[in-house]
Amino acid sequence: MAIFIASTKSISRGNGQSAVASASYRAGVELEDKRYGKIHDYSKKHGVMSADIILPSALAAANTDIDRADLWNKAEAAEKRKDARVAREWLVNLPHELSEIDRKDLAHSFAQTLADRYGTIADCAIHEPTQKEIDRGADPRNFHAHILFTTRCAELDDNNEIILTDKASIELSDNKRRSLGMARVSHEIKEVRQIWEQIANEKLAEHDHKLIDSRSYAAQGIDIEPQLKMGSVATKLERDKYERELRKAEQAKEEGKHYEIDKTPATQLGTINEIINERNELVWGVELTKNQIVNDAADAIILNGHKIEGVEHSTPPPSRITVADEPIKEPEPTSAPKPKAPTLDAVAQAMAMAKGIKTKRADEQKQKEVALEQQRQRELAEQQKREQAERERIEQARADRARQLALENKQFLDDKKALYASVMAQLEQHTQKGIDPNSKTGKLILAISVANEVMHSFNQYTDNPDTTQRQRELASNERGALTDLVSDKSQQALNEIKNLHYTSERKTHTAALQDVLTEFADNHGQSIDKTQQQALQSAQKEITDYSSEINRSRSYGLGR
Image (cartoon, rainbow, N blue to C red; front, side, top):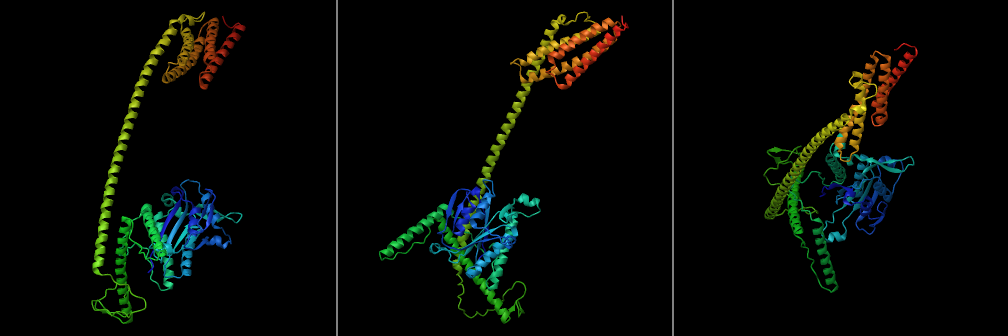
């Protein structure tokens, strides 16, 4: 009876894999890997029955072609990430009941369907178990196909050559698929498994063989226990023991002696898996026997008609069949032997053993989950502790910075008072000749002269290496305020000058105002912003224009 196997995995650089190496191994050929500068030679590999490149129908119709080395080197070149997926493999079990030609046709049909579905290229390699593998205990009916697909869609360029373009839809992330209105990748994979089931069953039905079922054994109501994963170490130990036993048998044969190969497992895992396998064979035997009884009953109903739950039928009912207690006539023996039903004791022992394994697994899983949860809680507590410490550190730094800024602000205010006091102590030096410093106009002109000296002091204060960055910022703000003050005082002074009675007074005060404003602009015009420069220039022009107006008035004899 055929079994259902259709599994997929990615060939990824993140796992140290190469598309070229994978294709070389599965096809049993020698290929050059241009990306890594290696030659992969598996031409001596046994068990490869065939290996063929299958293009999407659209490309095949264009009479184009590509060889295996070129295909997988292009697949490698198309990916830039160091952890990129460079190929996808589908592994399918080929029913042993079919002929070699039918198995190949079945594998190619599945590969062609997926190539057309995703627009990718397939590399389909069909394997059979080698004699060496059979000697080790492999099932001689284990015919299967490794089908490698490109992860990117294949198209033709302007030169009618095959190129790999965008990622196939099955390779997109769940987030990307969701944004495109597509289901999750897991749903896509389930659909592909159902595609294999449909294609395989069509071929099996052609030859009147039993069909396969993509559902799990649990979903089918069959109590099959999965074997434990061996791992590389245990697998190597099992193989090493088998090789030793073979050498002993060959040596005994050369000496004319008989040696019975010890087939007991070398590891505890191997022993458990052997027990699970024996138990599964018993369960499977019961299932086959049960199916055979039901099938025989159905045949009898079809041919002769039997009373089922008190109703006589000449054809099988469309739904579930329940056979009455009356004995059913055994079918005539045929050339094909029927599966022998295991004894109830054997089944009970196997069931008890499987139950013990399940219980042990459940306990181990529970312990693992508890340990993981404890580890997660510890990591969470550590993370919270680190986050709390970081928050406290940030708050402390902010508090320290606030205190430091407060100290620097206070120091600046003290320094500022000292600067102004120093300039005011020399106030007489800033009084303009012929100007009364106590008059309204004189006070305004004197303020501009004082501002000029204070600006000098702030420049020296800023250049002092002991001045902090914060204090430099405050000094810069103060210089900006003084510059605005000078512009305002200049305008106020000019307005007061225009109100003076005598022309001579207006001329004297205008000249003094020009002098102090020009001195301020010459000393500090380059250190102020553009807007303030324009304001000072505007004030200077207005004062100059008024001075010219006064001079014209005197020339006409209009003033006193």
